[in-house]
Length: 512
Image (cartoon, rainbow, N blue to C red; front, side, top):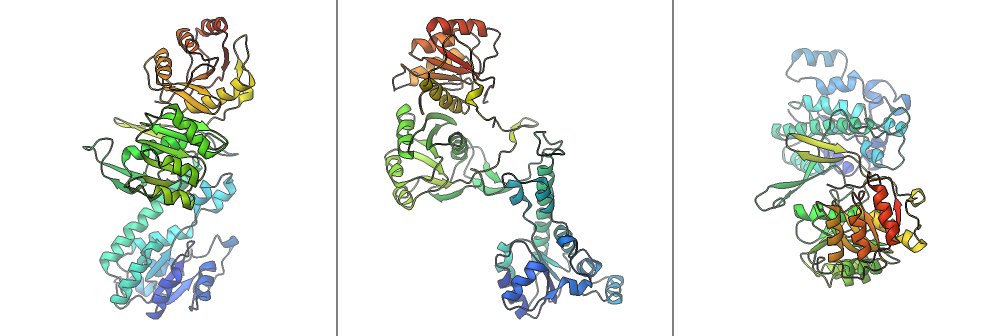
């Protein structure tokens, strides 16, 4: 490949484009462009030739057809050392194109927007862009293709150093990156549209599970020092796509716990705090303020909270940060941080702080030997009006509020799971036990706050009355559980005998 004579620029993301185009223009390269890209370049004072002038056809079909024309693709695909190719270009007056700078319609941004319609998704699918990218990548021996604005500075530098040329090594690296871009783009479209029926998004699982995602971080190790690990992410949302603002590098276990904490606090509309240890909450609360929520969560199990991971569903304020700074914690997730909160927490040089953006629900994927399991997210909406009172006594308004809170928490505790709670505050948590009655016993044993007058949530039904009898022995007054056991009559009878109120949700929240 000799000196670049002609470049086609057509981008959605115009970051840094004018700078690269200026370097090209100063090197005597003719710039060809389309629509908004051409307008951006002209506003930067650069001379640009419209694609329509090259093809002899205007943009048509509302912009759906711009660059799909032999005068464009022929100029990209022609092999310069092939005499027949070059004769065909000359016969049809097709100008060779030596550099293609293209990025694609932001389909994934549209797909991530809540409420995006099928029509909006379809119109966000780029047609000409992938064709241009693939054409240039296929002909990398003669044509360079640039798809990422992050590459512009290096490209500009090499053009200056090599007198307007790009090395074969550079072109080959750009081509490989370009094929990865179009492959990922098509996968995103296929994955998104697989969830749509004729009238809207459905819950069906894809026939082929596509797990091609970008490696963002190579971690020091996995769950244990002898295991290798890395973080892979699709975008900038959720814990995987969060921005780290401070602290040591994140570990595998930090990320797992941060995600557990973040998923829990997302359950609540009011200010909420979660304290997580080994993916299970050792404290969670929803109160009138973030400071009060943190204090209530910490009061549940202050011993286990040492070395924990925290999450908040509001930007962290200075007052709450001051309270958090009194405890040793590994990491914190929040939507944002007030300046005074950052100043206070950054005094702890090792404390990891991440800012998390909301992510739309997706498939939950787990590996197993020889394959993967995939399921839809456990995102069923809790409706307190749908609760069925199973006992002679219905819950009081205070018990009902506490039950609703406890039910949101128990959903995030490893099964078998039991949560003792007061209004807006966990009191005792029993997680991951082989028998439900043992989960009750452990939740009660872990409690440092009074159990009398609390309520209890169970993630699945009580198979025998013993669990209900045990929680009543510790002073609980009401129970929320899915129901559905063949021994429900025996469990209900025990609750009636003990004066408990019990409600059934009809929904189970196993968490393995």
